[in-house]
Length: 247
Image: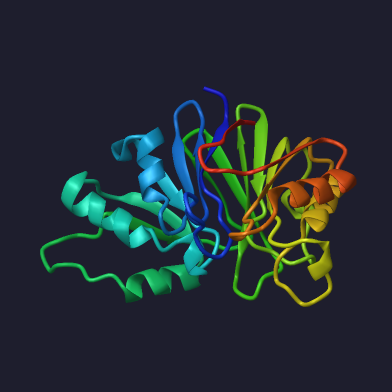
């Protein structure tokens, strides 16, 4: 199997009708990793993989639209699809929030094995190599890069314009980049990117293929695509639930 990324949900900040918050399934020959698990992503995840086959979970930051399905996943692994020692990688802030709302029965062991990570973290999950970079966001937020089988995928997570993909290294084949607003909102202090800024960041980094994501409900997909296409000469698309991308 080639390195693939399946969009489970990609609505920015809150769910849109028919589109959960952020979540992607990253698969390779031997490994399946859930990258972010925003509210509503557990249902679409089960459409593409059996939960017993999920190897690990990686969470980019503590804003709830990127991780709040994790307690539901824990419940599944305790009561319905019994699992143990499922590795979860995320920031210290995310772990603290998760633990604050976790109520374990005295005779039950948490099926999730938490690993706190930061911008310098690098590790392997099966045949995937994961690395990170700190983005421009109000909380500690980690952009991610995954390498497997000679191909590379990068995800911006949430970021403002003070970050670009070069912090993740060269040779990125596919990038998913947040594009939460249009050009008219640039320079107004938003901790997010416009579609044009996302495209510029991808172009500067020499990325081959760009997919815009994290568009909030009501955002005009066609306008975002047009703004990005003006600044990015390569292939550009807009994420949608169910979209399966081969890196």
